[in-house]
Length: 107
Image 1 (cartoon, one colour):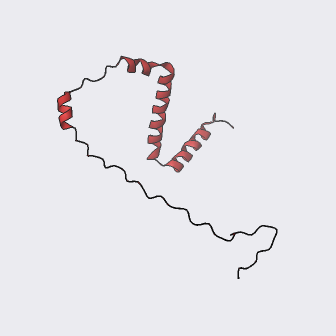
Image 2: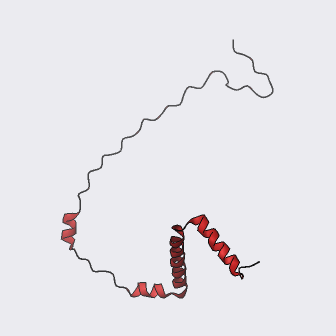
Image 3: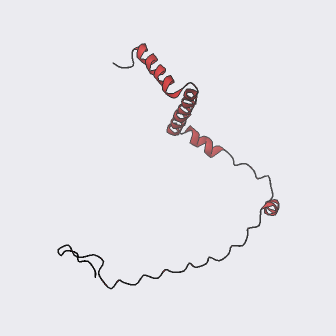
């Protein structure tokens, strides 16, 4: 009952084609392959060595040119304090009656 039979593999491929469609399957294979390649590189450490030996690109603009092209930030207004809500006055009669006594209508 495993995947050792070629008919089982063909059945799974046809099922995947029906579920995901012909357009989506190559995209899924490409992303799966790149993920597996990245995982393999992270385990072997090849990507780490190439990242350490790579030189950062040299800046092409001078500091003066960068400062001249940078936009001037707009002044920020001071925040306005929101009014504080005052609590409502406490009711003179209790709102809820206790559980033991029946509620009496107010006259």
